Every structure is written in C-alpha cells, then in structure tokens.
Length: 160
Image 1 (cartoon, rainbow, N blue to C red):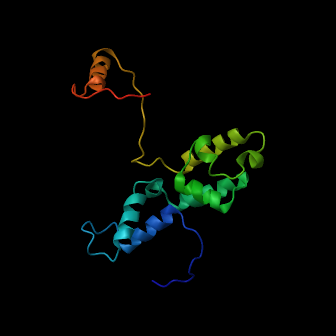
Image 2: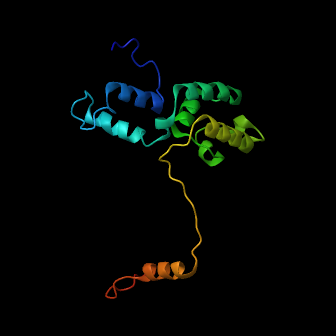
C-alpha cells in the first residue's frame, strides 16, 4: 500500500473500521498472525460496538448529500455520522450555535435531522434498548425485600 496524500483530512469511524478490516484485524481471532498492533485491535473492538459497524460508504455519501439543505459544517456532518444522534438533545451539542443558525424552528429542524439519521443509518445491533416495566404483585415485594436486605451488623449511615 502506498500513501498518496498524508493527512488528507478527517476520517469517519466507518473509514477507520474499514481500514482496520482491510489490514486483517477481523480475520485473525488469535490476534497474532495479522500485522495489526494491539492498540489497533482495541480501536477495532471499540468501533465494532458503535454505529460504524453497520454503516456503508453509500449511506455516508447519501447522508452528506441530504444534509446540505441544513447548511452543516463538515465537522458537524462528521460528528453526526460518527455519533449517530437521533434526538434534538443529542444533536444540539453537535451543531454549533444551533438556535441562531436554525432560526425559529430549530427544534423541529433538529427532529428532521434526527429522523434523517435514523432513516439513512441503520440501528446498531448491539445498541442497548431501554424498556421500563412497572413492578407488579409479588415481584414488587421481592424487589423491596432485596433492596432492604443488608448486613444486620452494619450501622446506618449518617446523612447530616
């Protein structure tokens, strides 16, 4: 492999993951045969747990094209691709001066961008989903008993 242009620009997490795969990080389960450094394996393992593992080059290009109407900076697009924020709460820190740049309907535009991110980039398979289920009947009593269970020898903590 020959380097054509050193430091050509920032890379997405997908591009780094793709590079590490091409280097052999995914093919060597023993991690001794491929010419991959231990630190590169750590990066590979981390990126496999992020949204980058499900992204495609076509999806990234598609997102970059669709995001032009929102007048986002290259760094903002890169962060959105890497972080995959889908709610306004996740998007506001990524987009600089969001309220001023997006105008009156900033929240609505953030929701549009979030929906676009959800549509273009698939949900990572290992992304945790949270469900809140109410406690019912004996389960609630069992939970209370478990929460209250402690060593009888322990003194209560003073909070004053």
